[in-house]
Image (tube, rainbow, N blue to C red):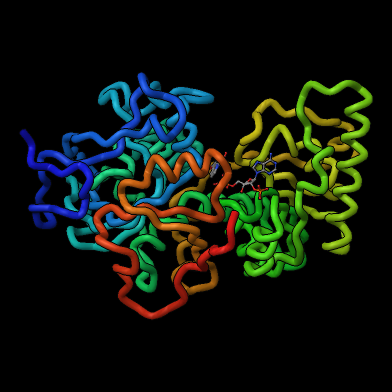
Length: 419
Ligand SMILES: NC(=O)c1ccc[n+]([C@@H]2O[C@H](COP(=O)([O-])OP(=O)(O)OC[C@H]3O[C@@H](n4cnc5c(N)ncnc54)[C@H](OP(=O)(O)O)[C@@H]3O)[C@@H](O)[C@H]2O)c1
């Protein structure tokens, strides 16, 4: 019988540099794909050794993201088909973490045991030429750690490539530092790289109080761009305003603009009218139509996004939460020379540049809740049910909230308003 207490990831009998044989981890398996509350189960798992240019990090806190809602559901694809899953047969999710470098593999020189880090979630093979000139996101081997691969952060230890490590901002606690990477770095690439956002730009942000949205709003404010955030309650609207948005719109007032997909021509006409009314409301707040639309909702909102963006403007999209088969009236795209830009996470350079804005306090994590290790399944279920605001962190190695901060500075914004 093992002496490992699966419910207590804070206990360790090894020093940095040494790994125990087994660890506790929240695991998803193919046979229990379904609602997150059931799909995640605690299991005892062997601790992996680091390969060349790899690092084993002791996870102090982990961040919750929508990707592991998809992983739990086994929808729209089973993650078990990707990356190293077929080799191990399990999925340990978690694409955000703060922690301590515990053991380094051959060839690692920038990091040593004891270093305090956060982790970005892009992995790519060192051997792919795209990594060395074009963009690691273009590499055939590109994968999201803790989603397309196992050994994510909902475990005592995680295995990552050395290039995924970033210095932990000293003024943040473990749970604050673990909370923002995936969504913030994604929003950074979408707006700063893909749209080359400048002072004076006008931006429409869907889901502005959600994970991506809270950072999109802050990036607009930091860059001197004006933005309007779409939300589903006045409480969320207040949060978005506090983060620097020019204004917000409650999408419940424009229910008729959402595309459902099974509409009659008359219904489509009525929807179009509602989208126009929404566009007018956006322009009233911004003083003009937005030249950038920040999209991730997909099917329900995409026709409105294309219609609302200004001629020659850009719709940048990284997801299709309500459906990924999009249809829209393409005349508004070509006649007005609008652009649709796909975007996915970020490269290590962008992550480092974005993290510097966190280190300087210009951008702040937005934390809604921190749960103990037992909260992994519940947190993903809340996200699935859209009952959250901003981000949720999970304490793993950290015994309680508030630890890990070694310098003064603005911490996370606490999204305390009810969802
Ligand atoms: N490709 C990438 O690299 C990447 C990176 C990060 C996330 N993603 C994906 O992006 C999506 C959003 O992620 P997130 O972390 O921001 O999730 P989130 O925290 O759940 O936020 C999404 C927001 O979208 C809004 N929303 C939900 N349903 C909607 C609907 N029917 N119409 C309009 N708005 C709706 C909700 O806000 P209101 O209810 O207030 O409107 C919600 O807060 C997920 O599918 C995720 O997997 C992709």
